[in-house]
Image (cartoon, rainbow, N blue to C red; front, side, top):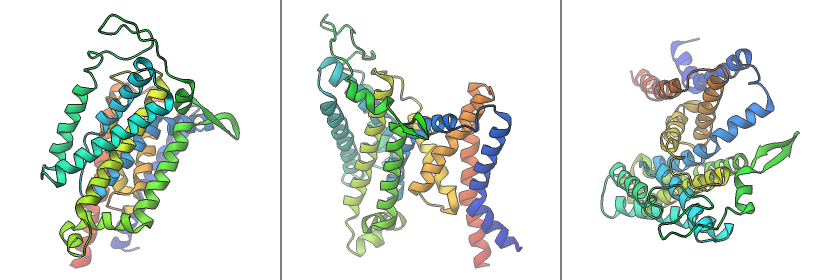
Length: 338
């Protein structure tokens, strides 16, 4: 086999082989890892970050980046709790408010970037700090739960409705009773929808064209600004869905529960670049990237690895993925042109 063929094979399948090797390793040395319950637990642990990562992927496709997703998710978590516990709204009203909030934040992000020419990183970073501050104001930085004392001395009498908690806690039967959680089902559905949108529709192809060369796309009549705004709105809505699921799982408005959502989601989206040698943002790769992180952390936990090593390992995986994506791809490109 020639060197070029080996390089192409490594770029295309290296990451999947690494993923398979991890599964075999943990199945051999971590007792209980190779079981349906363990697999579902991994999927459940990555469902929320995976949904957020799919939104980030849409902004990466148009050559943007959304740093506000973690703050949007936490804001949705707090908003849903505030809506039901303090304002005593129904589950439907709370969910609609969160989705509208996510879409509005995405709209503002998009307008800041395309109308006011603020660089995407700065615009979404500013939005992140804005939301972090805003979500703490109504409760003076406290988490929201039934029975909490409000600033006017009254007690919050509302509660999370059973219908809302169903979203985060219910499980469907599949081979085993109560096996597949609702968040996992939603993660798969959203991943398939975004994959189909980006890969199979004209709008998705135009978004990739904008990401490759926005000026060329504009010259052929593409509404570049509209697609960019739409990408940030998709990101905002997916982040708010993640926040809703997190609130439904916790059953309270815990203001600190979304601290790691941003980094884990960005890591999954960037790892996705390396899957099948895509070297570009893609929904399938993002889903695999989220799964990879989940398998890694679950395996390490079951082997009693210290918790403080997990971020280091995630960082190492991300670096390896980026080497697969950019260094080897560049080397292959140089070999073809020489």
